[in-house]
Length: 216
Image (tube, rainbow, N blue to C red):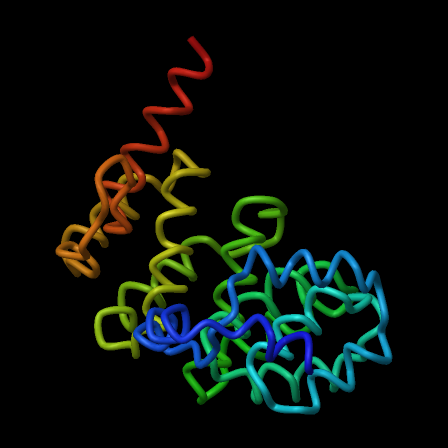
């Protein structure tokens, strides 16, 4: 905790807090500290228990993802309210552990939109890497019915799933693009130069274009 406190930068905290992340640690320096510590599951659990965002981020970098029980991860995702902690928990821990599919199914229908967003993030991962057995038409039905009015984080995760269906699965591409065009979710999202817009029709078109260049 003393090492983390020494990394605190007021300007970094001000920038992070605009995104809902209440910490002031440069993530490159945080990763360097994690590398020094190495994998330490007990320390990771102790850091998580502090309820301090920077400590929890460090915990997720030094933990052993497969060591967590299913119910432990369920508790953690409900405690992870800072966006960066939530994102790292899903991507660095849950996706790498043995409980990802069970939690994906449970979380996707959870009444808490932050928890549900974790389920949709796991679904988007399956759309890309392991789509066999997924009901893509059913997913598109839910996106079409619910994404427009979903809270921000859930909306973002559902939009990612929509875009990945369109990118990865040509047979569903036209419908995915059509849903994006009708709902107009993230159509006006500010996008930096040389970055791809998260607006699903634009995102799909750009990634498909890159795929075609790669095949040429």
